[in-house]
Length: 207
Image 1: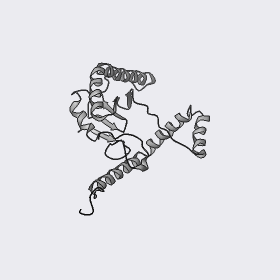
Image 2: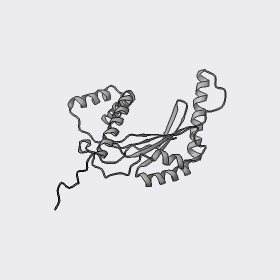
Image 3: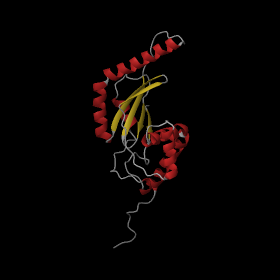
């Protein structure tokens, strides 16, 4: 079965959640079945295993494992460089030879789920994403938070406050993945309980 992850603002894959989330965005179709839909739609033989499908409110990202490169690459600086070049070439070949079909699959998925579709390929520890979306996110920060960003900029870690914020979010994601997974599971349980509760639209009396 194809693996899938939902990175969403609120369980269910909708584009709007409780007021606490602060989104100002129209409802989106649910995308809980996106991984299953892609499992049935992708051509056989593209990937060696089941691709990873990650979904949020703006984008669906599909990353699959390609066959390993063949050849004897010695454990030397030159051998490692040759292997890296062979891996890059294999991923580039996949990207070019599947381009038209990927565009058609993406068009169908975008119509179904109202989200952009991005692709990626992986060989071993090397992963390359093809044209993923970069979505602006507005926020207001007080001085202590701005000082953190400015420190990253002044030290050369980031080129701008925007880059510094993206770097900080990426770092949190790397080091708090287990906690974020638990948080998403808890949100899913809350959503399930809410769906089982009484509806607010039921009448309380008779005419």
